[in-house]
Image (cartoon, rainbow, N blue to C red; front, side):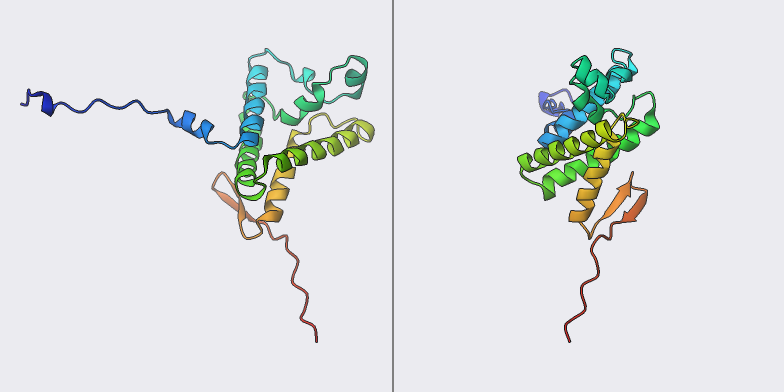
Length: 178
């Protein structure tokens, strides 16, 4: 048995938790969108927020000045108490938005402009043409996946690492001139 101080293991240096490192290394737009989406789902799960306070409704926006509905309907994927729906949408949004932000649209302002422009078009359509559309967060997710797949035609969309879908967007090259 060793009783000398040299035989004792070295004290462990304090390290950051893996979650903390993961969060700090997340790109800005992805971090913002994922954080607010998660917090919204969490607040709804605990009953502190009601999904009826979040959905897109033209009358409530114009008459009651509930302008937060223009943003809240874009980040609500359901509550955490509905894990299948929430995990499906938030996984796709996080994974492909992160890759889109890190590798394809590297200027944050371009990605924010894409989100603002797409949200304005989708909300204008939902408010003016189809009053049955209340949440546009799935549409934002499909926007991200569509842009990602159009820019990375050589990669595949992966669903939780189990299913792989090809994204063959490129048309066949034109035939060579005679």
